[in-house]
Length: 380
Ligand SMILES: [Zn+2]
Image: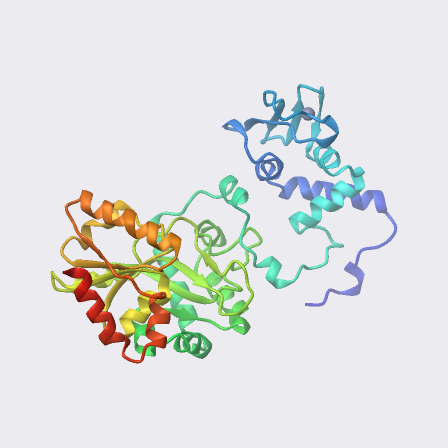
């Protein structure tokens, strides 16, 4: 988008422009998240006030005394009782960064994405998920029913885009297209990013999208680098989406909506299984989908340590076999889960594979047969 020449920042009228920018900041800033960025461990945060250890460098606090900084988040004022210094957010920024008022205004404007003179940051940066403290200080979580509506729409919008890159990424890991379809795993290419974002904005108020974590404070879709989507489905409805990058070298590799993982991955498929069936408990989406590709029933944990006790009940009517990664974390988790199961009068059998499930199936020509034999031995 090009701007008409006459709206470009002018060199003259520096002070006027600075004060106008200051006023723009005052209208846009969320004081709570501004101050919390510098005081990550507030004490007694209540209503519009909190106390914290004063972080102002020139005060040279030992960090051992009682919290001397008091912040009024409704008016954006601070006061350090120990050094008797206080003021507004601009003053605070000056002290924190050891800069002049003008530099403080420009710095804060940049952080808020304000000002006529701003350069647009690259799309990847505008699409970045909000920082954790911004989320904490920000929007209330959304009602589950609205989250589901957003998930369902997001998947439908993405499914209308070209799926080839996502499918071939999974195919290279031995996961077939039929399994991808059954699991509703969905992809959209980078070039479709703006279109996907627009369709979501057409369908929901931006505040709802922000509260779900799908969009950030800059009103951008946060699924920018992470476009291979794995929905968690409960009773036929997508309730949560986790996504991974398909590119090498992108960290973190995973991104998800707000909130925590609501269930075991693929748990919804258990409903169709007869009692007494063998169900594998594995790590992650890839291992789960690998087993589904080979006609084994499986549910997935996000990370080795993620099993919650309330997820065990639906597993009670099956013969559950853990096939976690053979690394330290996987082994320790399997031992702990065995006890969790036992505490509920259930049994968790454990499979010892030489590698993770996906690798095992990719490198053993007769993996299905071997896997079945290992399972029988583990269940005896
Ligand atoms: Zn202080």
